[in-house]
Amino acid sequence: MGGEGSMMHAVNSVKENRKLLKKRKFKSVDDVFGKKNSTFLSFKKSSPKDILRVQKDMQLQKQRNLKIQVVSFLMTVLIILGIYLLLS
Image (cartoon, rainbow, N blue to C red; front, top):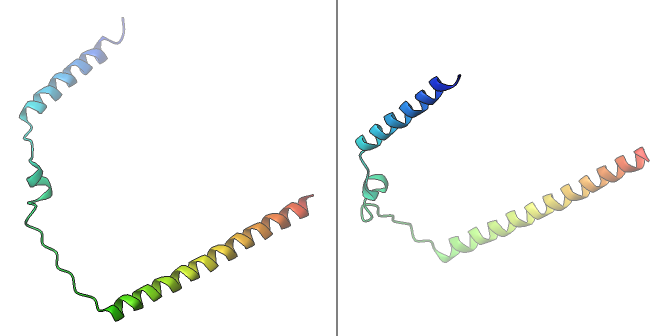
């Protein structure tokens, strides 16, 4: 009957994996992510003028993106409509 060798290999693999699990050393959360108090971030203070400038730039970028999306949508619709009219 075939297949005994492959089952024996599966059983041996399970045994070997069990032995490896016993040797494993578990890491603590501090070892993996570091100490909670060891990282200190310092940010520069922004002036109100800088904040307004950044907000204005973000608004302009949002308007540009909206225009690009609208033009892309219209071009896609026109292309699909053109193909439909050519094929019909």
